[in-house]
Every structure is written in C-alpha cells, then in structure tokens.
Image 1 (tube, rainbow, N blue to C red):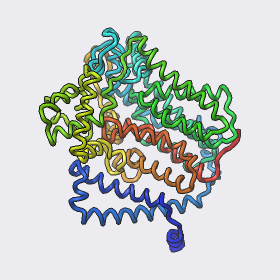
Image 2: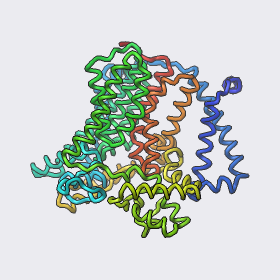
Image 3: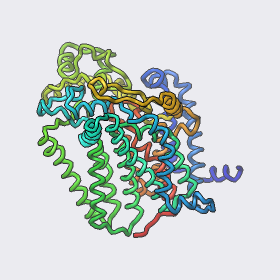
Length: 551
C-alpha cells in the first residue's frame, strides 16, 4: 500500500485529470441542487457547505483517477487458461455465446410471449393499419389517406406492421408479434455474441469476455428489451456494429478496403439511418473523424460518406414524399426552447403581445400548468402544426428577448431536462413490462399468456436491478456517461487522440440525449449503455498492447 501511495504522490498530475475531477465533483454538487429544488440556488445559498464539499469531492476523485491511471499505465493483457469452457469459448466464441445468451433469455421470451408492446410501437401499428393516432394528428399529412409519418422510422414501422399482418392473415395476431420478437431477438443476440467473438479475435482477456457474457445473459435490461418492440433495440445493435467497425479501421493501419468492405460499411450506415431518425446525425458527427484517421483509405471512405449523404437526401426528399409519407414535425427538435419558454411563462408570465406570439405556436391556455421540468412532451404536444415560418420567426425573436431578461431561468430549464444523463445517482424510467392494450381496443387479439407469476418475478427483478449495489450501475445512465468520460480522459492523458474516434458514436448519442424531450430516459441512452461492455473491452485491448494490425 505504501508503494502505491508513493507512486501516486510521484505521478505527475496532468490537466486532463484535474479537469475530469472537477467535472465529476461539480456535477454531483449541482445535480443534487437541481434534484432538490429544480435550480442551482442551493449551491450558492449554502456556499459555506457546497464549496468545502466540492473541494473534498475534487480531492477524492483526483486521488481515485490518479490511482486508476497509474494502474492502467502498467496494465498488460494476459490470456491464459486451462479451463475447458474457456477453451471452448475461445474456439467457438460466437456459437457458445449465442447459445448461452438465448438459454438465459428463454424465461423472459416464454413469459412475455408474444412481445412487450409500449405506447410507441402500439402507435406504429396503428399507423401501419391506417388507424387514427396522435402522431398522425400532430402533422399536416401529405395525403389524408396515408397516416404513416416519419416521426417513428418508417422501416421499423413497416417491419413491425408486416409481421403483425402475417399473423393476422394466418389467424393469430400474437403469432405475428412473436415473429417480430424472434427477428429482434436474433438480431440483438447475434450482435452481442459477435462482440464476444470480435473481442476473442483481438485477444481481449478471457476473464473480461466471461464477465461480458454474464452481463449480456443475466442483466435484465437485455432480455427484457429483446422482447420490447421499440425501435431502439435494433438501432442499438447497429450502433454496436458501428463501434466495432470504427475500432477495426483505426487499429488496422495496413487494411486495404475493397469493394465488398465498402459495401458492407455503406449498408451499415444506411441501416443506422433507417432505424432511427437521429441515426443520421450520429453518422454525420462521427464518420468524418473515421475518414481522417484512416489515411490509407481516406478517398474510399470519403466516397462511402458522400454516397451515404446522397442516399439520406434521396430517402427523405424523394422516396418518402413519393409514397406520401409525412416527415416528422419540427416540434421534435425544439424541446429545449419550448421548455425554456414554458418555464419562463410559469415563473414570470408574459405581456399581451408576447402571449399572442407564443399562443400561435404552443397554446398558452394552460402552458404554465403543462410544464414538467424533466419532460417536454406535455409542452410540445400542443405545438400548433399549422404554425407558419413567419410565426416561428416571431416566436424565436420573443424567445431571445426573454432569454436576455432571465438567462439563468433558461439554463435551469435546460439543466432540469438533461442532468440525469450526467449524474450517476439518479435512476428514472428503465424497462417496459406492463401489458399495453392500445391495439386491443382497435380489435387486435394481442394478449400475454397465463404465466402471470413468472412475469411478475422477472419484471420485479428488472425493476429492482438498478438499485442493487455496484452491479446495478451497469444499467445506470449517468454512470455509463462517467465511464465514457473516464476513457476519453485517459486517452487524452496518454496523448492518443486517435483512440477517441471509436468512442465518438457514444459521445454523439449523449449529445442527442441533451436535445431530447426527457431527462434520464433509458431508451435514448440505450446505444451507449448496451455497447459499454464492448467499449470497455476494446479499451482494455487498446491500452494493453494487443491491438491487432493484421490485414
């Protein structure tokens, strides 16, 4: 212990460690204040407590980070075992992993047959079958006979609806939904198994691979979401593959990409784009860095990126309009200003002129009472879909004027809606498990089986899991964000900026969460939470000197 402390004392503390320690301690102090009173006022009101506490937390984090970085500096991967299962896993990593995962998921698959429906997939089913629904009502339809909109990714809506239609044709809606579940289960389990296989290939230590396999198999968020018909599951699977792709390209310097490789890359990018509307932004924010980090293939990757941008443009501006599919409402990207306006109206009120301007956009009759600090849906759901560009222009002009009157309030409105993505001591909504009867009311014969007790036990385990000490942090949004910060900081500390590139899809996801309508919303953070076991495994490989640079 004395030797370790001496090493800590002698270790030169770089700015990156100091900055990260300050970020962690500041986040705890300010987020606690927002939890208690929805503002940062407690930090300043009780400064004689908050400042000493900030200093103490800073010193603790600084010490812990120094110790960890000191350990990582000396870390070397080892991968030797005579265990028969380990040898079998090394020999057949994909097959063994997917068998183990599916066996452990089977109680969930059986108990929640045919699928877990929640509001979003239920509304998507309604859209597919031409049944009136709120998402169609939110938009000015291009064709009143086509109520499918791109609020939810059209490809996912078509996949879900087609599976249900097949079941409907053969006389079993439940069977149709289970067909969708099987597709999703196979996609997710295959991708997770592929991560084990890839980590085996690049020689990530077997102990970590076993831990990862146990996480995939036993942590309830994986099997429960494999049965949840939300768009985020398949999308997150593609993001995991994208992270592997980036890592593979930045660590294989001599890799010469051929046409088949470029085709696979383009297909993956398009899948990311198609299965979530903000998938395009993740690619847009990350792929240019991949291009710049892979000089040998820079022209080829640039061509792929240009093709991707062209396909995205064609899809949104030619294909969808051709089929009279209405684009997503602009309200979906205005959560931040709408929350700021609602909070301003609630705490300050507005004059008659401002009232009329805001009312054209957001319906002022009950705006103040609709304001929820951590959820913008009640505010933006009453967005006037007939709002003109001129009315929006006037709105933002008034919005800016109110910003200058009380900028702190605007900051409070934004922080309240995002702090949970950066605070590891907050757990909000987590899993779906309840029976949703929305489509039943429209005549579909969807129902759970008779295994009520089994569902109760499994959902109970899923609900308490985030609160289990230590291991519950695996599903904690803020904690996963902290891990990401830590990995990035270490790579900066080692002056290895190239290694950060494979972490960028997770960073981009966090940025999208900041602009999202809800605080600490698990589905939005799912891509980087589901990929975190892989992300850490790749990091271990990267810093442990086992980077595979074979062609």
